[in-house]
Image (cartoon, rainbow, N blue to C red; front, side, top):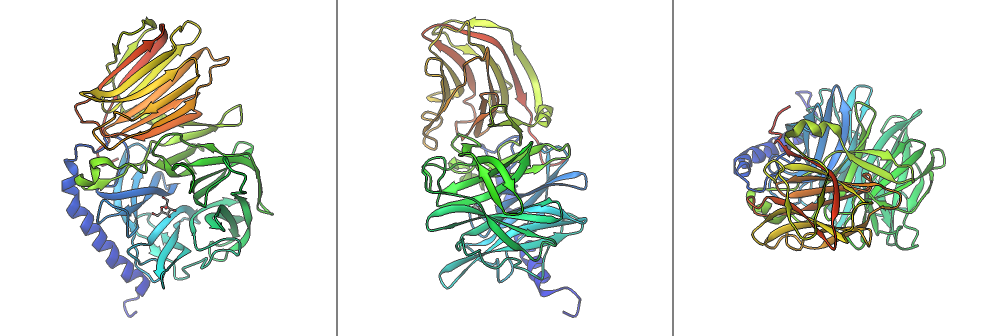
Amino acid sequence: MSNGISPVCTHHLRRLEIAQRAREAADRRVETGRFRQRYHFMAPSGWINDPNGLIYWRDRYHLFYQHNPFKPEWGAMHWGHACSRDMVHWKHEPIALAPSESYDLDERGGCFSGSAVDNRGVLTLIYTGRVYRNGEYLETVCLAESADGVHFEKHRANPVISRPPETGSRDFRDPKVWRHGDYWYLIVGTCKDGRGKAALYRSRDLLDWEYLNVPAENSGRGSGDAGDMWECPDLFPLGTKHILVFSPIGVERQKAVYLSGVLDYDKGIFTHTDWDEVDRGFNYYAPQSFTDSRDRRVIIGWAGGCYGPTQQEGWCGYLALPRRIEPARDGKLRFIPIEELQSLRESPKRYNSFLLPEGKRFFLDAGGGVSCELLLRIRLAETTAQKMTLDLRAGGDEYTRVELDFSAAELSLDRGHSDAFYSFGIRRGQVEIDGIPELLLHIFLDACSVELFFNDYKTVMTGNIFPQPEHASIFIKAEGGGVAVAGIETYGLSGIGGTI
Ligand code: FRU
């Protein structure tokens, strides 16, 4: 072109402008949303799903995300973008990627999920281009680059991987790239003959990719090893092991899981355990992890599924809180809310140890009861109750119930009465009690969510709930005996607003 700007670039700029304008026009309607989260990350308006391209780059965290700026519904995927200094307070940036080229321009496709790396100072996004051609979809690996971390140009060499390996199929998406030794490594989700798998590649320059192997796949052995397609695979070192996180399609319910094992980089072989869940709740999908400024491994997931009334408010979806991943002694992983979240705490309240007698409701004061954090410790030796219930967001006929069954050593999160008609179902998890003097339940509530951590942060349950905003009581109750409460801490949590 005579002005020196390539056609790839002008198409993209035009599409970005259209998307940005649509989003700005929608923003005001969203502001008054009654169910808007107060401290969880959301798009300014429209739709959000997977977190993409998490990276700490030039003193800031960058978070990209699957985004439809036109409607609070999935479709025409763009990459939204935000920056932060603490992963808690975020500043929205201009939309980073819009569908604009032959390999990604499609109403039902677009710029699908991927990751980010620093390639010699250039912030490089590795994403999935998806289009429909002759009734079939085509998924490829593409690059976009930025020198300033705000404006991204799609690479002229796109797509850099234009077809799946022999062992894969048309489902070929969500590349996650990382550096090891002299190579970039890329893991991508695919499947064949109804079996989900992850495929591994390597490259010296991010452009020419050598296919290595399938380090892990659904071997058909049943539970703990299943799924027709593995979305958003993420393979990373942790301590002496490697962890593979992915979101399998076609299992009994939506979830994100992890395998733990040893990776042979040259052969692309991953010797691993059966899977365990990253989150046992209702709404946690397609998480991505990265190394933060302090060398911690942090994971952020999309609180997907169950959208309640928010679409009527012009927005849909949010991201679950950032969690630090640590190996536990028993080989499992711990998912701990990052310490930076403590900066949101206000109006602290402390309850010293007491015996909660059978049958009596004990109300907890936790900020306003909507946007708050609770830490509840229970001494097992002196507890005689069979059960303890903790009702959250209670009021009218609504409540969301956490039930601790001491005799069955089980915890459940029950959404049967959470709201008028959006939420339902119950999730259960074993509670480790052998040799454990004190149980800790750590809970975060926001306008339409609950995140519950227990078993020393090895079990997490995330759920979306849509109670009326004024339904905000919290109380505990013992059944069949007393509960020895070792102590309770509560905090109101302040909203994050829009800037860092
Ligand atoms: C997971 C996913 C990815 C895909 C993206 C599209 O939620 O289906 O596999 O890249 O969402 O928005």
